[in-house]
Image 1 (tube, rainbow, N blue to C red):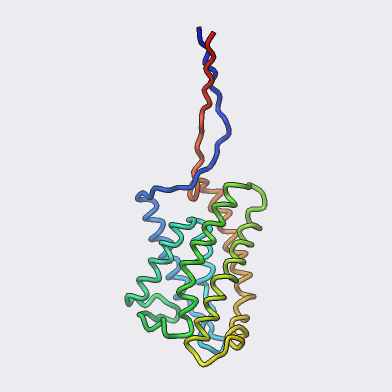
Image 2 (cartoon, rainbow, N blue to C red):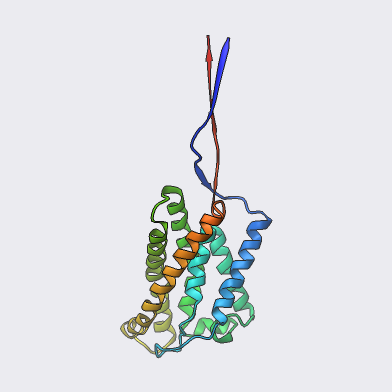
Length: 214
């Protein structure tokens, strides 16, 4: 005789690995979001012509919601379309010529930043349900400093006559706005994950089956 005891266990979360039509749609939607954020008139206050826009908010939000692969794909799609000639960069600019300007480092950094912050968001979603907004904010802020600002400073120094020190000082003007934008990105991302809990990682229910033979 055998008794089978089937009981539901905890629901671990696994990262989405296969893309479907919904994933492709999300990539397109968030690429459009980044483009829309870039088209909002910005203020060029740092002396190098690099405007303050809502792009970093959209980039970080994209990574925090879609994760590393889809986040990179969405922002990468936006970047490729802009380099191909669509006027979707800040101030309506487009084309490969942007890579010779002071904004080049920031443009290159955006897809990388979306991928990195997306990976960090995946770690947060899998490992904790508490203080996610704080962890998302910290993830976005660290990514901004290490990736966006670092490459942005290098781009300014390479494509202008500024020294690295001058480029660094010119970049500092973006920090206060970035902190506010990272807070907004974290709060919005938490709300979206609460409303759509499977958007980044999916919950998998497993059944443990124990068979005893007597």
